[in-house]
Image 1 (cartoon, rainbow, N blue to C red):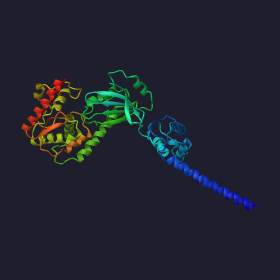
Image 2: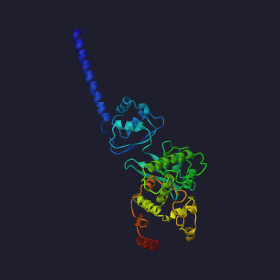
Image 3: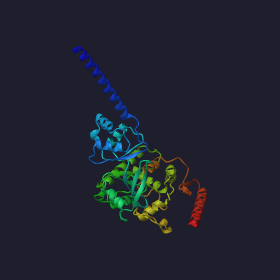
Image 4: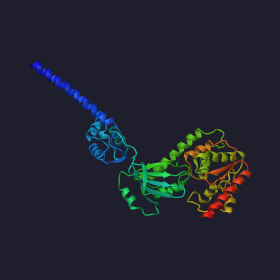
Length: 385
């Protein structure tokens, strides 16, 4: 009898093991297979939230088929205690395994509300925008000029939301004064900036920041980034460029930055100035003259006067030979690389061509024809206004 009982018990035990194995296998398949989500969604993980709370939210939104399997899978992967607060984009068809990775990976939030402080060449603005998870595109909900306009209610409410992301986007060609003046007007920052950094020393880029961040710390970060960019570009420079130091490269790069906003022609513009430096021809570029007038503090807002073009100043490249004494703006990485590795061309002239780019020329005759064409375009545009 005991043998029969033992045999039956062993059989039952084996069946239970097989069933358990099958259940585990089924659970693993459910955990790793494509999920039921038809459209991307934004999932918010509150500060102090739990995997149980997140699983219920995901289940309610149709992102996971079984919240219990989601939690067990997270436990098995030792990720239940790694949950990160924030707002995260969950793509359509994401498996439970992928979603667990998304909400425990950390780093920058990938959806929800974002405030972008844009520091441009002619203006600054603060933009509040929301990511539409179905299109993966941002929808602007408010825009204003910090330090000038009253902050809209949408922005005020965003400042009280811990999940909101903040970025400072600095445009290529902005001056150091413009950057410092803008940072002082942004209420997301604290601390003082004692003095304006040297022109050209700040790297234009998009920087993620946190409320209460120190203004001087961001300036230091931008400075370190520009130093790294310049050092790497100088190391990889064309040995034949007529530039004696990284500082001269930064000066030329700033001129290139102000002369063109078309990425694919930066090296052509660089070739014109390089050829002029080699041949001892004055650079004759308006942006340097303008900088001599404004010192980078705001926008000139008018055309240059003939008296300003004739007056000898350290920045009037119609009068002085070679480069001005300092950069005239903060150039981006592409302009720095263009200054140190220009195209090999015979060009020594260029003028706007009406498309946003420039017409290049080797001889003064060709250049004069290009200038005449540009004047014609200017006159036609003026007549239409």
